[in-house]
Length: 122
Picture 1 (cartoon, rainbow, N blue to C red):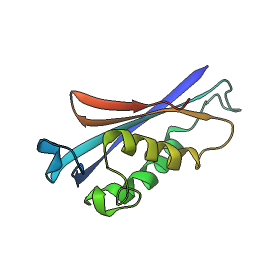
Picture 2 (picture 1 turned 90 degrees about the vertical axis):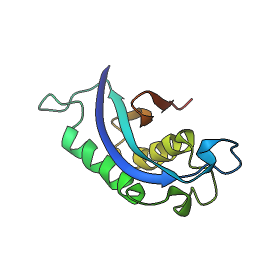
Picture 3 (picture 1 turned 180 degrees about the vertical axis):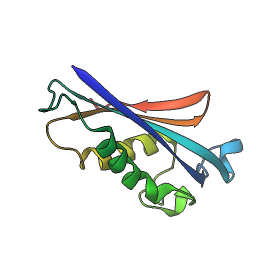
């Protein structure tokens, strides 16, 4: 099995509805996102998946979240923009862009250098 990962970030503000603490107030993060896909096969030139293509797909997903208040952007206008919900939303949007030759295995969303969430589907 081969795993291929790329990393990108976006800057955004958010607040957590019904949270009782500091995160209830509007605040910002540089969200760092790491995505990993896996495959058991290499293509004709020996690549599991082209980094350039994976970065492009990830960037197209993350561009909707850069320099906005996440609470104003669907689906976070209806659900809390928690790191857990952000990771799952990124997973769903990115997975739909990938070929069926690979499987998106995980999405990590880092709110800070020491705190992150990993979404791995069942």
